[in-house]
Structure formats: structure tokens, C-alpha cells
Image (cartoon, rainbow, N blue to C red):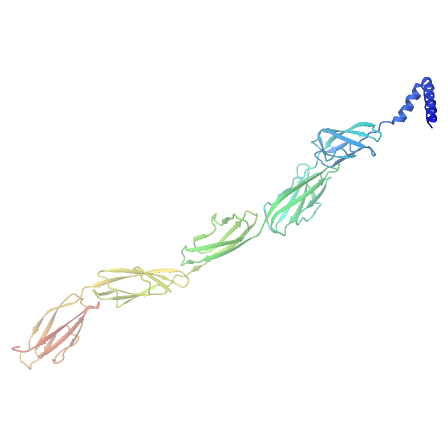
Length: 443
């Protein structure tokens, strides 16, 4: 066996010696075939890229043992750099980037190639404008972007009515893509759009809008009284998104109103969520209570006696002396004015007053008396001496054992022996009483 190997080696040496001596080129060709040719390196992928776009794929030759990718310029590799394919994110328009790939085959042969990609395709705009924003639940939203009419647009989000949108001229030689959305829930909503240009570049955008709950309004009205300006409106606001603003007819911006005359008042309430609501409230006019005061016995009375004042026409009363009953009894030492606030069933009030004037009491001073001339004669007399009171005094005479009286007459004559009683009453109610005895001659 060893002899066979030796003979084969000698034969090969002899063959090589003769071949190499006669043709060196053939020798190295044979040597190249023994080692193997270097692998073919190539990069497949787009020659042009959209700006700021991720996921651009480039691929090297198949079947290599190893791959080594690198990049320079306006771009970056995302993910592994040792696979057959690589993912690139492009940079800004109008720059470029250069990809370099080194491959090694199974025979350890290697090769390097590169590819320059030009970023000359700008991405389409995808900046969403939402109007109104914020908005009230149930409102129609306008969603719009600036876009070439040759673009393909895809909208998404709650209540979008036309996912493709409609291109309309913007008035400056360009176009706007417009769609609408009607929301069915409140809260923060996100709307998205994807725009694909006619040269294949894609861009996406999102925008948010706050959708508020509709405002509920109610008004509690207090009517005015008797043509005055005592009316009021108390607003109650529920739902909606604080803070609230108020705009009344006439420019008032407070929530509630007071000191109002009769009439209709309108307010618009707006909130931070884009909702608003308008209501009107009418302030009516209630009549004043028919306040009255009755006085017993009358407004002029005898000093030291009592006078009763009784108010009427309402459901509650407040006198100037702080009493709250309908009737009060007073006995002022001098002229006095009493007034009462009368409140009716409708809440309206009215005031009324009364002047009380005390009068000087009546005094019966010593009268002028003429005794009868005999025990049986009827020629006695009594003449009263009165101070105080008034000229409108009244008289009431009586006697238990005499005769000759005229009961309502001031002075008496034609009297017999006896006892005579008198009560004098002034027109103001003051009274005085006295008793006089006629004894005849000799007492």
C-alpha cells in the first residue's frame, strides 16, 4: 500500500513539473479551481427612499455563511446587521445614505459591495386639524389635513362618517382632505389618518379631542312684587365640564340674577368641554298684600288707657316694636307711630302705619251747687266744673233717691233733696265720675 502512495506522489510531481514548466497559466488556473472563486456580492432594494421612513428593506445574496452590514449618511440600521436582509430608517429629504455589505461563503471567500440610496421623496403631511375642539357630545366634528388630491387617505376614529375623506380646494392652489365624525361617547377621543402619496410615501398622524357631556340647565324664579325690582333667577347647572361661563342678555356674566323687574331673561352657559346651552326664564309680577290696620277704640285715646292695633291682609306680620302677632296692645305716654310689615301668601310685603295720639284725662272740679229751699222743694241745682276732655263730652246722670234729673244734660236744675251721680265721657274715651248730695236748708 505504501508503495502505491509513493508511486502516485511521484507521478503527480512529475506531472506538475512538466505542466508547470510548459504552461504556468494553466498551473494557476488549476490552483484557483482548487481554492474556489470569491462570492458574488450584491444588494437588492430601492434606489430611492421616502424621507424619515422606517422598514425599508435591503437584501444580500442568498447562501452566504456570514453577512456584515454597515451604513453611512442620512439613515440608520434598525435591528440585526448580520442577516441576509437589513431594515433601514431613512433620514431627511433630500440627503442620501450608503449601505455596505460584506459576505463570506463556505470556503471562507469574502466579497464587499455597496449601494447608495437617495432620499428624494418627501413624506406627505399628516397634521390633523379638529374643529370644534373641545366639542360637545353629539356635535359634528370636522377632521381635515392638507394633502395632494392624488394621495390616498384613510381616516379612523369613533364616528368617522367617510374613511376616505373628500378633497376640496384650499383656495391657495392646494387641497384639503376633509371628513366628519359624530361621537357617541364622552371623554378623550383620538382620531388617526394615514396618507399615501402617489409615489408611495406613507405618513400617519393622530390628534385628540375632548368630548364633553351636554349641559343641563334649570332655573328657579322669584317673581317681583307690585311693579318693583325684587325678582330673582337662581340657575342650577348639572353635567358639563367646569369651569362655566355665563352670558345674559344685557351683558351680565354672573350665574344668578337678583333685583329684577318683571320680564323675560335669556342666558347662555358654556363650559370647558365645548358644550353650551341657552334657556330663558320669565320673572312675573305678584300683587302686594292689601295691608290694613284697625284701631280700637280709636287713634285718639285717653292717656293711660290701652289701644289695640290689629293688622290685616297677610299671612305674617312684623311690627315696628318687633312683635309678630296680628294684634298688639299699646299705651304710649305720648304721640307714637306704629308701622307693620305685612307679608302675603305670595311672599310679597307691604308696609302700613298708624299714628296714636293720647289725650288729656277729664277732671271734675268742685261744682257750683244750689241747695233746695225746703226739704220738699224742687229748686236745687248742680253746675259742673270740668277741665280736660273736649267740647264733645257726653254726660250720664243718675240718682237713687232724688228727682228732677235730665240724665244727658251737663248741668242740672229743678232738683230735690237727694244724691246725684254723674259720669262724663270725652270723645277720646276719657271718663270721670262724681257724686253730689243735696241736703236742703240747714243741711
